[in-house]
Image 1 (cartoon, helix red, strand yellow):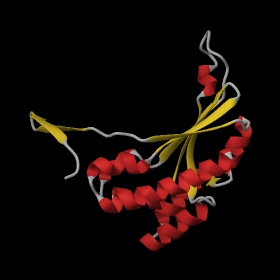
Image 2 (cartoon, one colour; image 1 turned 180 degrees about the vertical axis):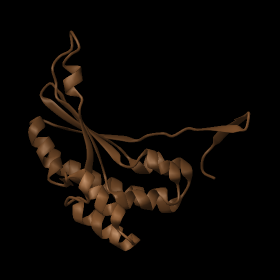
Image 3 (cartoon, helix red, strand yellow; image 1 turned 180 degrees about the horizontal axis):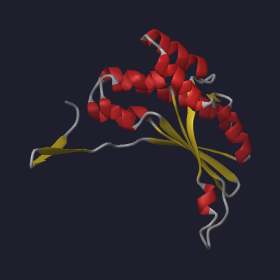
Image 4 (tube, rainbow, N blue to C red; image 1 turned 60 degrees about the horizontal axis):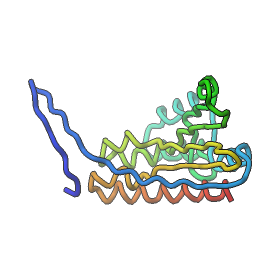
Length: 178
């Protein structure tokens, strides 16, 4: 296999450790935080997640599931699963300059199934994270490449899906910051 793993067995339990190297892409812009966030939201849907998941779960076939996911996805094929306004907590720290910082957990449930079908561990990386923060007059957007996260598992089917997802996300982010 293309990765090295270390397994330890004790009392009928096995613990496996695998090193995963992450490649992070960070984009910088002088655009305003709200403008960058709005640009990202142009490609990401924010449906009633409870209703969307109910529809996905009620699909009787994989094709119906795929269609239901596509119907609730944004133009970039992505759905917001969670938004964490990290600046709310940061603002409570003494001697910490105020800044905006938001973590978006986004993805596509169909894409996730294409990855976890072959490598269950890929479920740790899908959906994915987009981090947006202010740094003075600069706004930064960071994204960890899914292809780098799944590479240690050595499955080309999963790597191909991850590379396609990376291109979708990076295209969205580049458009939002330019």
